[in-house]
Length: 456
Ligand code: PXG
Image (cartoon, rainbow, N blue to C red):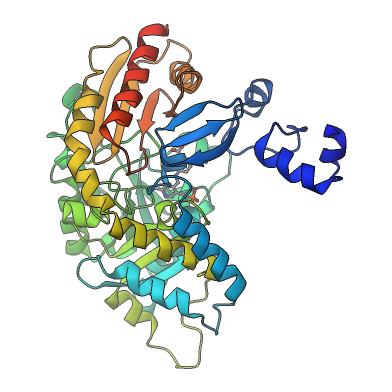
């Protein structure tokens, strides 16, 4: 029967088999960012999810310490989103947003910008964080060109930055493995140094004291390249994927000052920090630093339907609106920009965030979370612990000659013991759904503590 299922016969059973059991064929799916051979030799299936827990293929409850991939902020299996999606598909399954409109996209854009400061009040929709980043970079380049400063072509990223996997994003990104195999990438890109320094900042609670001067490296790049060649600086307010690097006190403010001084656009990539991760709608609200452009994704739909977005300030939008009224103002967009079903999912998600006061909940449990995270400080292998909002990372000492091995082993053991964490090299990253309660926090760090005591 399994073979018949694999060939697509016996549809009823196939649906059941594919969604709830073990697939008959593991070979065809080339899994992203995965050690495919390791996984296929020792597969780990997630087959259902509700609230804070996944159900594994072997029927165990797995505490979700990562909100899926930093995206399921309101917890799993939300009825309201499912209903909104179903209703939207039945009412209007798809409509183009090129030269046409449907109401949900306008309603959502309006809702999204409500909590944003200043004049960050226009939204361009994409389908992922990677696409949001490409879009933001293109907006920055074209903005300067439209203003008659077309020499501003250079983009500045930061070491260890993650801005998705498309060519612009990996060019400004600073993760070696994401860059080295893919040719010359965008030209004219330079990078700020990352802000991580264990000697100075190990076991900081919240923002580290040391490191504001690292923002001054932007001044150095301005001297080197000249401001007239620089379009934008893009940073994650908190660098997530590389292992949760919290910005030193004053660092983001300083970046903002230098960008202002030289007419450089500041882009915050808030794909992870957006939608309540820090207890505020966005990191810009949390840190009180206002960029010119923000990229978001993930929590925008609670991870249910792919969607990303770019928020831009009024002045940028207006600059694009100077040409002939009947001409396309920005030659960019995706078939699914502002997809009606994604919009419906997002509107329902925003309702949940608001009605349940989930961002305020983060503020309520943040101290408990911080204390629980730092209680692991004396365990074997632990080099550093970092946290802010509902984010934390535990940095482990790499096994000599085998970088990432200890992180991966920790991830596997935690999964065996009922907790899903994410290994970024030898950093264990934690970013649970924001509905988390104290007993979940106990389970998460309790299991991690056990595992760290067990492993070599
Ligand atoms: N920017 C940031 C800051 C991100 O964290 C992206 C852009 C790209 O988003 P999409 O939707 O294109 O994946 C991300 C995504 C990890 C991990 O291992 C991190 C991400 C995605 C998958 C895994 O930590 N971040």
